[in-house]
Length: 550
Image 1: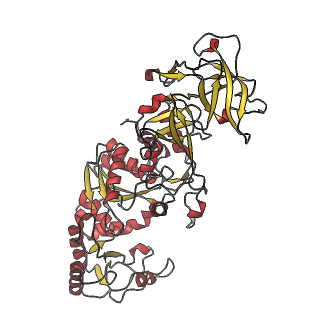
Image 2 (image 1 turned 120 degrees about the vertical axis):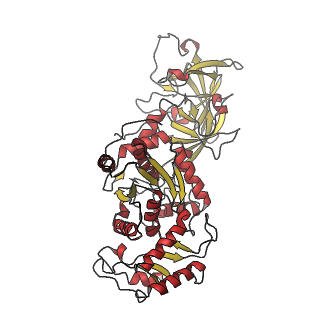
Image 3 (image 1 turned 180 degrees about the horizontal axis):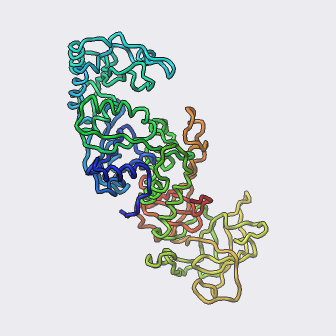
């Protein structure tokens, strides 16, 4: 992976100071996703931040699955998360599951009960919500708050043994029902869930809540800097309370940074799952959604994603990033890597009437003029070719320099051709053009007798390879990332256009995820899901140009 100077940010400055003062001898960070969905571009920001900081200071980064809610978590998500982190270019020092620590968490809950800081409560979830109070009014204490230590210990053991139904009892922390921070008003630490867990099976029927499990996991792993997004800022007092009152030897500290928001993008796993479940998109790897697997399938590169995340930086206040900024980094990454070939996505046949009918000529073409080391390839040329429908107009406007009756253009890597006749069907649709070529104008020669203003691309009709092209537009019409509850109403009905055309025969051996720049059309990726040996499918990653500027 490339080693670039890390941009300055407040977390990096804290780490520098902690190492300088001796507060920590080694930096340990962690990336702690819940395995309840596929990772998206927002998670990439956290991945890059945690791994980059640890790498810079010769520390360690753990991959940990915060799997404390078995109702929503699946092994499928665990495996996809591992794949995504590795694809982004990172290797974790250690792999943990929150469920690895369930026994330690249970024992810490017993400790809180013995200290008089936790109690078993019989209130329902709705009743707890109703008695929590508001920002202006204190909450009401549970009638079960005064249970004795002995009774709480007995009830909690019974909860573990499965003697109560789901929702009948919870374990709550005993803190302060009048606290100005609602998270400190006797939060729930454990709930009952008689359901199988992806990692522990049926061993447990009580599960710790995230706000209890997360700080304990950090402490048990020896994490030094626990990096979270800003929505967890109000949870930090509870994080510190759990670490302190559970008497953890390791003392991690939580730091919050702004999450990644992007225009025209849904960043909620719940909403992304809704799109998948309703089959609005083609699975979790649909190129129209911002999952890492979707970005990978569309053709984004890990290098581009890392560069994008590093460029937006780490801040303490939320903002929204233009999605075109990510496209900019993809173009920058691909421009020297991708072979430049020709593809016709809306074909119009051209018959070159004065070219020998059975002759095939092979033209030399550079694979990438900006990167000569990529060499050259051979392109077949014969009397029948395909051009783009958009490159011909029967009645052209002013300053139109492409093909029209009586006009001459250059075929890229080939000859000048001139349109002489337009063939139409019974409905008046143009089906074919008859042209002539000038054999003296072959590309690479010193022909200077006349000039043409237009150059168009083409493929040989006899040897071109049939292909599908998938062109994408933003899935969400609303430019705001924080989409309303009815975001489904903002779905773009034209977010995907599938076209059938042709590519050069040299692409017949292209493999899934191979990337190409198609002349004038943009950068494309061989779709790993729908391509076949006989008919490749190309996803457009980005167009060639953008108005976006850094």
